[in-house]
Image 1 (cartoon, rainbow, N blue to C red):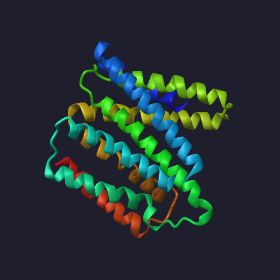
Image 2 (cartoon, rainbow, N blue to C red):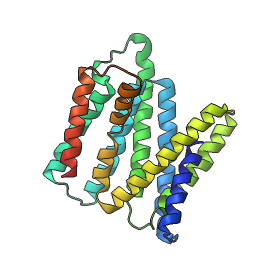
Image 3 (cartoon, rainbow, N blue to C red):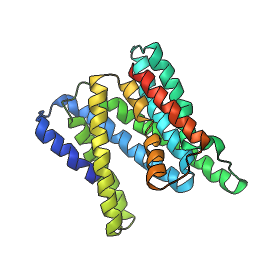
Image 4 (cartoon, rainbow, N blue to C red):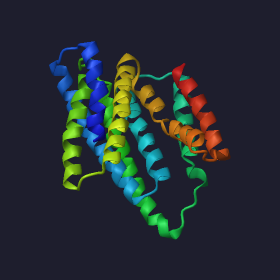
Length: 242
């Protein structure tokens, strides 16, 4: 359902933008759609068998590592400040997730290990999607729309086969999907207007927003480790943006 919700802001944006469909949009849209499916399935499976503080950071890290590696292999050079910022983003993400101070006992160790594998798979899938969004061959937001349509068809059919959902869950999924659709569009604009690798590094720091919302809205304790992670996040974004 979230993929269907993501189509709403995408279609609205394309109605304003008015870019025509071009043949160059088909391949990026297809590749991004496959990456989106792999990323979502890996993430949801990882969260079901492992720990969120393990799966989420790994998916974010590898989601950034794939486009960074791809751009470097393609001959793109990064400034010294951007490289330093990218390296700082790694501990920043781990600290924000709180993994540094989260002990795992024997009962949960196996599940977390399984979740880690799926976290890596999810990150690689999202990384491929990011790379495809950065291709300049497509026209406007068409690659985003095509990828979301592919993801919606596959994931919605799989969800239907596993049973229905209650109305509150559907509403939340649609709202979350609409927000995700805006994120897809923002990444496409950032990647095609600048560097895919650096856009991916900044996007990978999204758990910071989750932690801030939890602290502000749910009154969760921040802790020294997460506070350090938030500070490093600010430094990383500043360096990458130079």
